[in-house]
Amino acid sequence: MKKDKQIKLALKNCGSIDPEKIENYIAVDGYKALGTCLGEKGSSEIIDVIKASGLRGRGGGGFPTGEKWEMASKFVADQKYVICNADEGDPGAFMDRSILEGDPHVVLEAMAICGYSIGATEGYIYIRAEYPLAIKRLKMAIDQAKEAGLLGINILGSGFDFDIRLKYGAGAFVCGEETALIASMEGKRGTPVIKPPYPVECGYKGKPTIVNNVETYANIPVIINKGAEWFSSIGTSGSKGTKVFALAGKVKNVGLVEVPMGTTLRELIYDIGGGIINGKKFKAVQSGGPSGGCLTEKHLDTPIDYESLKECGSMMGSGGMIVMDEDDCMVAVAQFYLDFSVEESCGKCVPCREGNHVLYQILNKITHGKGELKDLDKLKAISEVVKSTSLCGLGQTSPNPVLSTLTNFYDEYYDHVVNKKCVSKQCRALVEYKIIEDNCIGCTACKRVCPAEAITGEVKGKHVIDPELCIKCGACIEKCKFNAIIVE
Amino acid sequence: MKKIKTISDLNAIRKVLENDRIDSEDKKVIVKVAMSTCSIATGSKKVISFFREQMGLEAIDSLVVQTGCMGLCHSEPTVIVSVPGKDSVIFGNVTEKKVNEIITSYIKEGNDIEGVLLKKNS
Image (cartoon, rainbow over all chains, first blue to last red; front, top):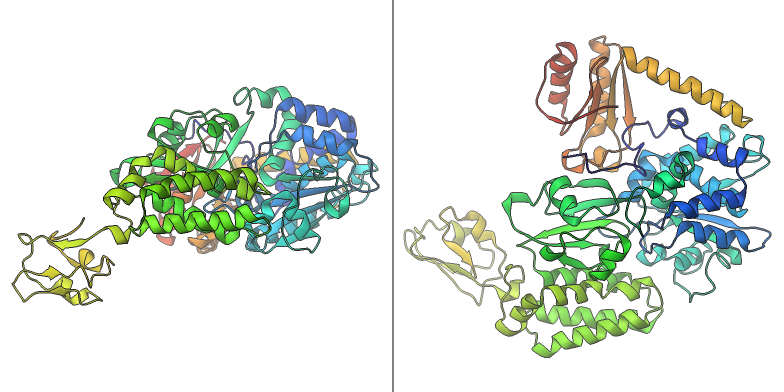
């Protein structure tokens, strides 16, 4: 894996220090930023630095972090809260888990800095219960920081108190949405509420609350230590710094990468990711998880930043990046993501609850060879409605995989509904298994393995598959040593 | 860790810790084994305990520590080996057999061996 294109800021300590030892973190400038803030900087000064750095939320939305802090700092309240959103739920994404497991103190330090700047003394990390190792290391880190006087009462003699506790999420995707997250923390059902008021004004327990993502926090100490100017020199005009991506799918070097904003998709997939596995052809890249879109070959030179990805019909999202090759059926991909959104919709608002379900059913119809041309128009129309009328980010973005595949892979949809063909041969209902007579030597291997007894033929005689009985499981292809079975 | 009472105390402690780190890296062989969920799933717990055991048996002045992951998921378990006077090297797909090879051939005899993902200047 080529490393030269990567810049590690959020991941700078991941893989180089022992995450279970606070001494290791302190030795690499750990808690230095907190010391600087408490000793030399006032609240507004810190917020100005974060604003000037141009840091934007890394959870997906991309809201300017400094502005969020400034708003929360201006509201007057007897208590304010700092929340870390560690409810990472996108399929295939594990950026936050890696940071929490590899460098838990960086998040604690950043949360304390945030607390000091907005005037909060309590912080919570909302973390998925499915992350036991991250939880264990966070607990350890909190205990160590308290013992060392870097959390708790009168931190470093400054008079500032800050404490951090963990709250566990049960894994509902919608709880990554900040208002649903807060509801879940309060012990209520995890459903979003209408904004405004935003959490910065009326959040946890009705008090001003900052909710930032793990990766956003991981950038804070380095910005304080190295300065806003240094940070904003990395990236593009509208998107500063770096972004961590979980590179997955049909790419050679699957893994976690951190690249400066403005790096192109091509550099990410080919230079860092090493290209497509098994010499296959690149087909699409899906960024932003179930809320993102599928981009194609023609988008490969798009720089990765919040605006450019949005313009192409995808989004930055939290950082999942799934690469697909010629064997992936784009209709089936859209159906997969819709299935996820249907499952995870909280059911509070009608467009998301019903609309996504209808979209899923139409896609299901298409992949089963029962689609009609007018279904494609329906997909588009319903998607637009769900997008524009849903209550929270989940519904507002869940049709993106459908819309982007419809735009970029219309031919594939057309093939499915009109020609009843799936070019990638992924949709079982649209393919047929056949035996090429000339290649078949009559070894009976396929006949013996077929679970549906759909293959007939004598030893040394030609074999035939009965399409009525065939369940298209593919077991015969795996057994045939003579390339006599094909999928059409 | 003892309670740190002031910012200057924190800075003083950092100086000590920084120095400790540099000193030890100068004379000891440092082995860092990635130990995040993904690494553990591919067998890094076995790798780290085997490294500790073997380094002890071979009586090599060394420090075997755990870290988070470097993001090289395609080649877990991964290990960073730093031998004094040489660039750090990252090995991928490390097994017990590979650990033996790293210790005898790379660390003790100073040979270049296969399985290096990349060199790191740290």
